[in-house]
Amino acid sequence: RESFRQSLQLRLKYLGPNNPNHPDIAVSYENMARLCYQVGFYKEAKEHFQRAAAIYRHNFAETHPRLVAIAKNLAGWKGKSEVSKQNV
Image (cartoon, rainbow, N blue to C red; front, top):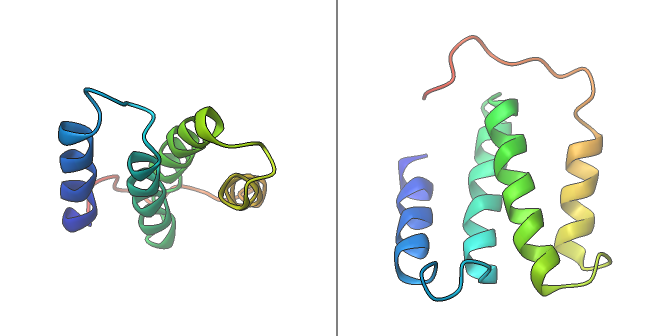
């Protein structure tokens, strides 16, 4: 998880100041979201997916495969509950 977090921080540091909606930043958010989802941190995963989707929407049409995949992931979470601790 730390590697994904570091990747996100580097992309925000080097790409974000000039282009906060750079698709590579969205990829890092999406990677963090997938990892958080896999370990049961659904709230954090949802936040990362939503950030990724917002950046993708800035760059791509709603029919873009990444946006469609995120929408499916978010729709499938009904009934999921958080694990007791939020930090791994």
